[in-house]
Image 1 (tube, rainbow, N blue to C red):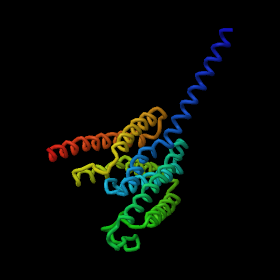
Image 2 (cartoon, rainbow, N blue to C red):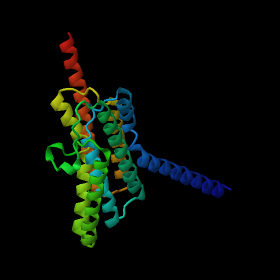
Image 3 (spheres, helix red, strand yellow):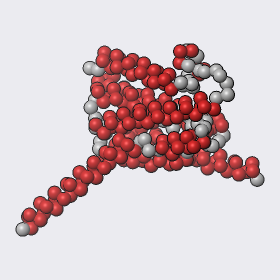
Image 4 (cartoon, rainbow, N blue to C red):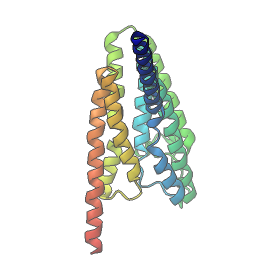
Length: 245
């Protein structure tokens, strides 16, 4: 009788652990997109995207495209592959809303396009289609290079490190924009708080699941950048009150 109860308890524990693991995986897949929801809503409500750095989208698109090709060479958890797909779709949604409000508020008739080949306006294009075209070209380039060098372990590891390096820098464009403007106006603080919570969760997830070292190093760097951005919020809000006083 006791043996039967012990077996049942063990099964219950296994079921509970499986449920928790499944929930953690779902959170990993979709959780990365959640921080951008308040920023998307802010841009939509204010019809102004100036406070949000679209170069965050550039960094994350490159990082997740590279991560997908890293998965082809070194098949880690499927959860992280699905997370990359969700993040790419999320970044396209953010770029679409930014292009929409910018074109609505545009006073000048001058349109900056990818076809102009003007480096000064790189990633400052007027048409959403240009961002799609750039990402398509980058994906094709990565596919060709990966196909040629897929048998090289060194290349695959370098690809993973490069993907994680870009992802670790996702908050850097926003940090630099805040620094140059000496303001965090227009940036959603909720987005940064969710970044921080998500990055802490991801770092723990990577360590627990013994993911490649590139992943938890990336998570640690992201947490540091998130904290610096939150310090900017405090610093620049104090400066605002001083000026008003």
